[in-house]
Image (cartoon, rainbow, N blue to C red; front, side, top):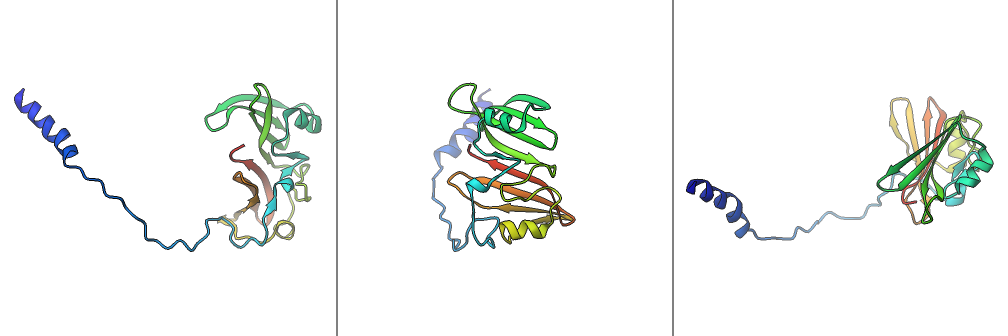
Length: 181
């Protein structure tokens, strides 16, 4: 028993007794900009983000007024958002988070995959990559095979995603996401 206690003291207490803290200082030059699209000429205003007449921060009532009755409604919970509600329509899905007033939900994400739902600037599913670039500017997309992701920066204090998936030169999905909605 004495050997077990001695071993515990030697392996647990002694290393902490002789621990000294030293601060690590990074010496990497920071002359770079953290961005997914450093080639983008101008950022896109928050008001230009949306699909099918739906915009980020819009209320659930406004969404239902524009799109009508959803095919499916799902309630859930996400740690970063809290209570959520997903309104599923044919070709577009709208995710809402509960605001400061209980029962009041606002749009934090829109995903469209039907040509019925265009952005406020008129880009829709099936449009060419060239039209996307003419409308929102040239950026360097991330690529995986024949699929490219065009992620445009947004001039808004909250991190906001305005992403277009392009496959074989055609827009196949539009995603708008307010990260800290």
